[in-house]
Image 1: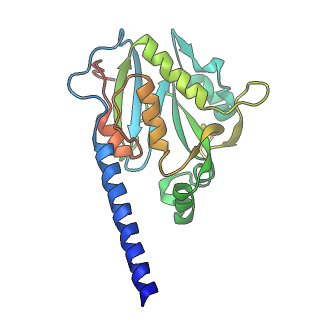
Image 2: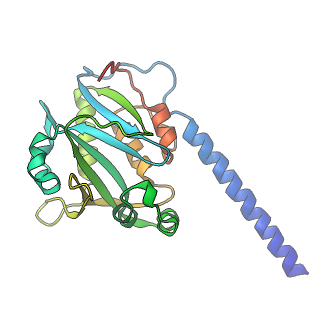
Image 3: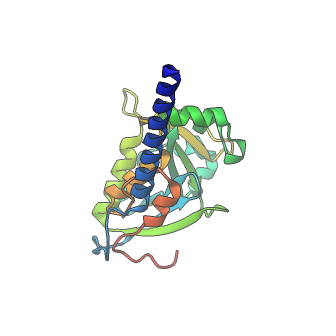
Length: 235
């Protein structure tokens, strides 16, 4: 009887601890890092986009502009072949390496892969996809953000630093997407419940002085707080 009572008490403590952690994370996800009217940061000349649904967020970046050219850092032909010459935008997302490669879309979600990704620390990958125009996926929100030059370059530096490099300083492509316009690259960092794909997006936005939640693990929370002191206007 004493063992049963101890087990019940332990179960109660664990349940209370899990509930408290859930409450804390929920509050952190709904609380912005910056309050009130945000000051204008720089010249606001450089436009990026953030796309997000219920589970995942992506950064959408111009292939090139007067201050940064992704063609000098990535071989776009390796993910898009001859079509890559027409790419004007790149979509970047970070996540669990095995889950990313084995789950081409949410309709093919494997619950065991999802649980492994959440409860273990796993190697990560970057997903890169080329687009001719800014993509707007069904069921996802798309937000435009304008950045000043220094903030834009800080975001580019953040994305660059997320790629794992070989001894020659080159990115490591580890797979191709099923649509022949995307690729997977070895990435720095490990994926876990506390460091998710959305946390990566939030970290990148934070590097560019864009508002984010205290905890960026949830896609809707990241999308809720995306703003800075620049007005983006129409696409």
